[in-house]
Image 1: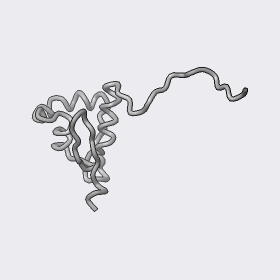
Image 2: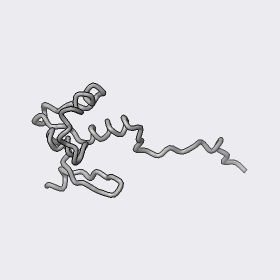
Image 3: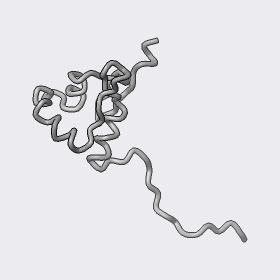
Image 4: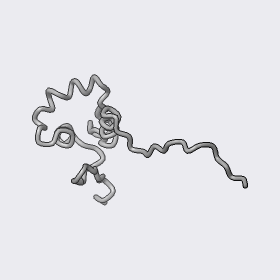
Length: 93
């Protein structure tokens, strides 16, 4: 049932298949990529900003969708569509 424990993360040109829950090492790789070795220096700052904590009930792992939502909010990226108001409804003749 591995297909139920993975999630696609879409970037601009790449897709990554990852588990829903990740350990600290994989979390660093997902967030910083090739700069993952800098994670110990960056993590305290992000934790002060509200970086989601590990789930003790899930073996101390981190819920990846919550991490992604944290970074989207932090960077001002919205996952939804915003439609401008087009005026009052006019359903009559």
